[in-house]
Length: 402
Image 1 (tube, one colour):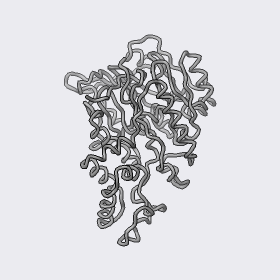
Image 2 (cartoon, helix red, strand yellow):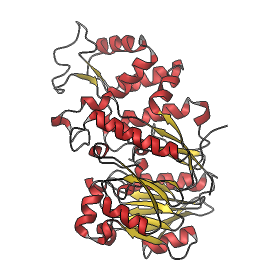
Image 3 (cartoon, rainbow, N blue to C red):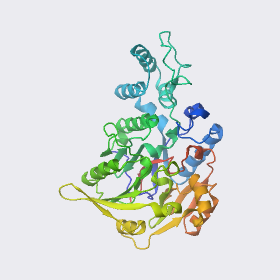
Image 4 (cartoon, rainbow, N blue to C red):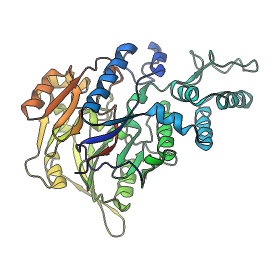
């Protein structure tokens, strides 16, 4: 029986997948920051301490933590999975067949712990070299990687989302992150307790981008999906159709358009759920958002209804009057912008009305507490350098049913 079940953003979290920042982040260099989607070089020892603090906060609230690297090592015991993941990495190698064959033999020969490290942290020519290597192999790669590190992998939310008993496997917007979502897919497919009942989005076959940070499970019957910089309109149509016709119990999808800019790359960077009737939003985008309710008819055709406001859409979707959408930063444009950049709105609910946030967002945290939200504030000055908060770093797979 699968351990997967998520029917809300706020049910008490029972089991969650994390990835502790590792050697892949030690390989970030200044002239590749924009390519790997970072703003600065993180201080790694402090970053790992902060991530441990996040994990401790989750455990203190009853969550069992599964680490991706451990799951990956177990998956590599399966020869088919091992072969698939090696080929995924080799597909990124820019070299001739002789070099690729040599790389394949090298990777196959490694123990699972070492192979898992290469799959996550990349493989450089300082770790493997052969005499037959062409002089042209690395003309476009200053740092000599056969396949590159995955420094964004600690943002586990981006690469997939559990919805009810199924999974949406993300199709990443940027090519450099494609291997992340394929690793996570293999973990689900080859781990008995994690096999999904449904696949709502198939990253092996779909070409339109869809990322997990844009997916919020509002209730047993409704999912909210962001139309953002990283998730396309076509992908929203596809996943909406799959959700609404799967038989999983989802009856409507809310699609929410937000500005397509780097600072708001996902919906959860500007909007998250706190309690049954409470949400937090970055107020500077309120004038720009649009919400559409998507349903399906008996012929399995999608229907779209533009909503008058976000409040009205949420009240109808959740059947709750008086939804409270709290403005981050106290409504101040300056404070809101500063704290949103440091993920004040990227909260992670461990239970209804109790969230984990970064302690640096002092104004927003104070506002949450004034609205009867319990706040567990963790250190995140290094974690935030990758532009993500507590929700971004988490992939919950089991919550108490609401």
